Image (cartoon, rainbow, N blue to C red; front, side, top):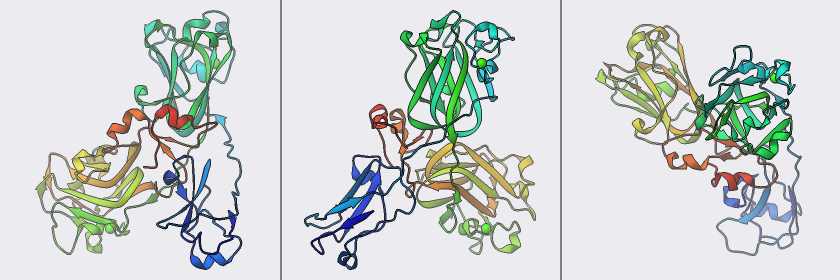
Length: 422
Ligand SMILES: [Ca+2]
Ligand SMILES: [Ca+2]
């Protein structure tokens, strides 16, 4: 980005922001604030630390009263054009009931878009209220669009009132709706297109009849998406750790975030509480992160079973009981591994990550915790939260968080009524 200036110092202390929000304060800063020494150049360059998906670019004086006075702003960018593929083909599909075992749910992801029942490539549930079909994509994708191929030889109206949902939950009612409910006028087309107003991070895609008892009967679903590959890093290292008690001042809570994954107590890099009921350890990450996975390194020289029955919680509350559990409680069979992995069912927005013994009196004794997360603050993409979970925002989650960019207009804001960098 480049500027020309006329009056020397007026633009000193200006900052540039780029993003999807009309409210410029919500957007991401690009480059550094203008310093006095830069104002003698005609062109001032702001290189964003990474590309930012944006529609609005702003310049603003920070903590200064002055004329904002300059001659030109150039925004150097490329169009954002995702490369989409049908990621549903051949994946595991299930439905609320099978009309016949010869027409299973998998017929809708067999890659065959024939619209005749006789093709043997359509599927149907029995006639039932709220009949549903879903596909497990097997991994997380960024879903932009869903295309449903309707039956055309007969019965085209059966799918009227169906909705599509996309998300990370197996419980389809928790996921985000993509596009609009099917209306009668759409059923004369072979292919019905659902464009998600923003791309949705999802593993499960479902179709369900809303307030209607009918056969859920169609021939193919294509899920147009791109791979979603978050860049994760251990954000716990060197952060402030505390625990319910110290077994010894020489083995403080901070030993579990010192970056050393040695499993031997003698390494001096493990931590332990005293023996107590519900012993806990926690780390304050110092900022909000999008947490995907937690890795606990267990002690292996002795005492492996002490951490059995521990649970991991992640969230925005200092009171760890208010936070959301990530992964399952540790079982005895896991303790022979040096590293125990907790994959959160969906990414959780959190600042505090804890480990606690559940219904057990013991020393809480382990060697390292790695918190694999994305830095939301630095994230150039926006996170859009469904409006119906904003009430839960203080304690949770990104359960369904959608990651921009929006297409066309600002439909995201309108539809969800809430958009923010968390
Ligand atoms: Ca098919
Ligand atoms: Ca350590």
